[in-house]
Amino acid sequence: MGEMRMNNDLKIITSRIDLLFKRKSNTRYWLQVANDTYDQTFNFFFLSQKPYQRLRCTPIHTVTNYNLGNLETLLTGVNQAYKLTIDYTQFYGLRWPRSQRLIQKRRHSLE
Image 1 (tube, rainbow, N blue to C red):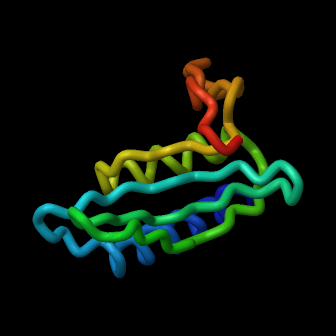
Image 2: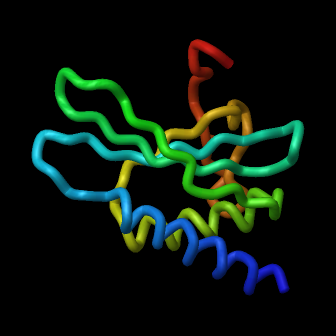
């Protein structure tokens, strides 16, 4: 059941990235994953910014399976489909279960 949900999450995230990722020149695209410890969810946002224009942030999905191991596998699938930079929020001090690397090295200014 958990793997089927994770595959569904991957399909939802990649389909929404497909809609938003225009591949325009001089435009920066990246993903942000936020750890919501209160609701115990992981929230995905798609961000884009053209030079001298405002940042656009679009929420694309909320993963309710609150497990770092599953998130690591899900992000591996997203990274295989798109080579986007991923910014992590509220993961300070946490490590990936498989690689034991720190997820977020420094706190953001508003954390």
